[in-house]
Image (cartoon, rainbow, N blue to C red; front, side, top):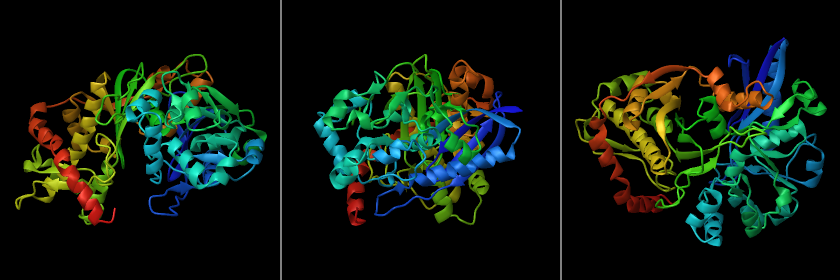
Length: 515
């Protein structure tokens, strides 16, 4: 028999399952898609039953493909901030009953601007909220969704017996136990991040019955075991330990080995995220506005030892800008061709700059109506200049997030790369040059599911800590040192000066567009 650890990641478009051995070797993977629904403009919802069906199908595929595999433990990761509301009968059925009160409102839903403003006003302003919860009120977070339901669907709210987040709903179906980890709880606006516990003051302020909230665990602590019913559904043996896990940012960082101070993770996917592990909370209290980066609990805590904290900053369109440019402007060219042409263009792209606000922006400028564009076009610029400027603009924005974190006292000695931005040599070197520290590319990029599997191993004693698990399983394939940093001084300075004078124009353009 081969001992294995299972990691389950409940993503927005699909659920991924990975099985690894105790050396970090990937034994099997499977995924299953689930749809997203947009019943109105700006709304984004999913049926939680689709997550369970996808999990059941993907886990069953992995188990059937390896009949000699013995699953030692299961860990979870998932999209953050979503709201799953269970009524009393569903909750009392301990996972064996389908259905929720209403569809889950997702992290990218935009309906709650009014509730966000009301939250900040109720606690005395944005800075006061960041002080209490570590974060500003954003439309993606969970508390604004609950207040929206309170106001617009009072019958649904009055029927709510338990709130769960996406991965926690699937774990509930697997174990019959309602739980949440501290990382995901940090993104609800109801957690006291410093104390690592639900905030009684915030729950009372917004009339959230403490009984509605699940029990909070450290990420590497056990949160139940596979029930007989779930065993029959998935093929995992009944009684298999299930570990709490964490949100996709925390689990993705664990999967890249970002579990100690001095290491940061730069993920260039559709969006761009800079994640740093910190030994204490680092709140953006004095920013303009406060809360541009998020102070949350990290995913390295165990049942016996509390974990650390993390700081994350997210830009909304990173590699997504490159995909849009390819698909809309240059669909006949391969990505390799575009990168090759960009590599022939010197740093600074011939005085051409690119603002990456293709879907608005969150960090470093919390501006949902910000607009993207190339600035400085002349008749001599080529397609290579456009792509070079785009790569530089996205990386400059990521560098601004990193600088924001440094201003809060976050130490950054090295940056590990993930997502599409880690797959091209030009973009890897560009990140080293802009971040000003060595950048590392891990051998494997299995993402949050891998981190969830490592957390599962820590939870059952395969490793004594998440740091030890990462040291045993994660290897670096390539390290790139910064080159001549001064060649980006002028373009970075020019880039940094663009947003403020254009902000008023963004509002005008949004109004013209009907926004």
